[in-house]
Length: 334
Length: 136
Image (cartoon, rainbow over all chains, first blue to last red; front, side):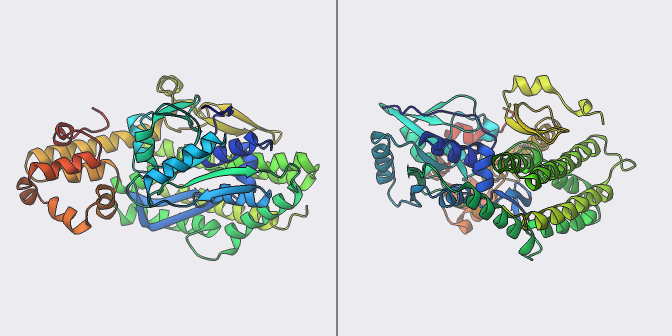
């Protein structure tokens, strides 16, 4: 039993899965659109939580929220099973879905996905895949991060769905039951942009949103004094990796959000959104410039050109321009 | 700026690490491209990251052979976990894990206990004892 599901190589696993599932049900929606309507953009800097030996940096909202926000705002009927206590029942429900020709999104741990190279097989439990077929004991998987579809045995899939470790997926599965063929895009996009603006600028907690960027900028100045040289450099390395590598590539989701704004502007012939999309691209260029200059600093280890002080100044500039941008975008009339 | 100096396209293509990236041009248009021609992405920073990680793992492996550390610490560091997260991954209590990470206690562990840890990591007992890293 293999469902005729169109696999698409996408930049970010959850937006890709969401867009794919909606597209299968007849709602043509692109990946940036799913990301934007799901209010996926965010920034978090948590110095007290360590991920991969460095503070936690995140450029997106909590896993699972993109699918939930997008489907709610577009009035899509969905089925979500948050957790199972019995793995056998979880696999049975998945098989039932496939029998009914419903492609199903799963949250899995990456450690058990054998088709990834060894460097990717880490205990990271927030990955998303779409299962669209079963033959004998093998599942057909649409893996958003890979160009082609993949195969996985049921034993491995079961392990991945019930991966142990922090924040285990516990077999979470989600699928689309029925789409509203003519959703109110204007309302959904207005709501989504307002929500992103609120989350980036109105939550006055120093570790999230634009305040997180500014806090990080201030902290970065002190890294060379506070930590030994190696450790400070490693923190910078991890930060640049989180901008450029985790999730989508290139300036931490900012380009994808710009693409969303551009698409929305074209949809409504809205001049304000056109210029917003352009400004988002400029801010993303600043992020890209930051990671480029950090990389050069990292390679040369030479304080005379760029150093932690100049890099933190760039970050402060990014924080200020993002604050201005998101405050203005929240007032957009659609 | 000269971006080429830190960007090695051939190596990335050889490793099959291409990814879709949204790009932005002078006119404010966005397009989807496949590749890494933007940034130090996965080239320098990722390369350096794995170099540092492999050096760290090599150091711990040497410490284990000198009897100052245990394979449990090696795998905890390999997967970038703290004791709490690693104990959840193995399915034991964190106090027990911390105790078993002491070389003197680890030396007295029965084979079936070590086998249990190897099973949780989905590797064989030999691989557990040999401490397989990312480079090997």
